[in-house]
Length: 260
Ligand code: IPD
Ligand code: CA
Ligand code: CA
Image 1 (cartoon, rainbow, N blue to C red):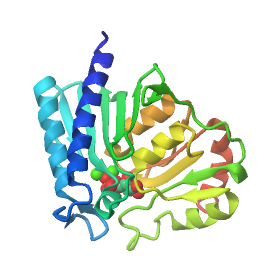
Image 2: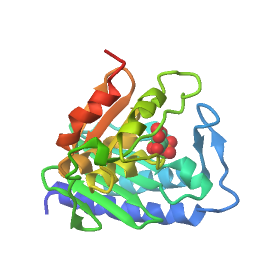
Image 3: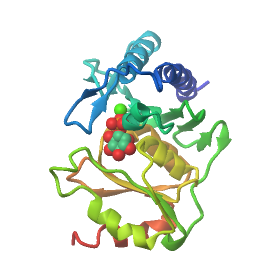
Image 4: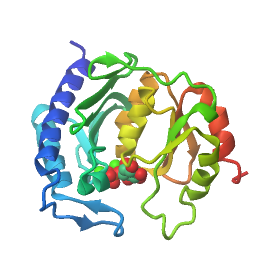
């Protein structure tokens, strides 16, 4: 078994266990919600419990690997291998009792993502990829949408937590996009949005100012499913358009209209 196959199997098992932890807190009355950067940006006991569980399992199985995760940041381990973890992606949904949330685990070797696992436990949807070996949903190969026209596309986005104080908040882009597309959605979990785009369930996704833990695993899954990952800009975190090649130009024509 190759290193990456072995790591994928371990990452799947960790994600499934973390999913059980999430479900044990889902719709509970005592989520211990705390605000982070502002009142829109929250963390719950489930985020912390999942993060601690994943870190402990990775340390046990791969003591030489480093971990970067949302709530704790980067550990001190120096390694070519790094696990990039969002313990709950879609915490606002989770807190509200909506089923669109995931555990996202991307594994990088020398800075390149080689394994990706995104698991939505309430939906029991497991997205996986190994670099160069394609992407799967629950063990079946997935492919991006064959849509070629944005007027036939269902597209998805999200909004940054600094939306109230920063006018560069994706609202102008969204207002331009909505009249041009068949359907517009805001599902609330960037990793799941990207994986749904990978599976051709959504036709395209874009968002500004994401973090590496939101996109590390999902971007590999999308790329392996045939999506283009287009970096929209350099000055606002992970700002990306994920779509089939045929939709890149029409999506960009709407998204970048005002900025040039
Ligand atoms: C958030 C979700 C959301 C996206 C935000 C992310 P979190 O992650 O992915 O869909 O719009 O930008 O920060 O905070 O729930 O891990
Ligand atoms: Ca996230
Ligand atoms: Ca999170």
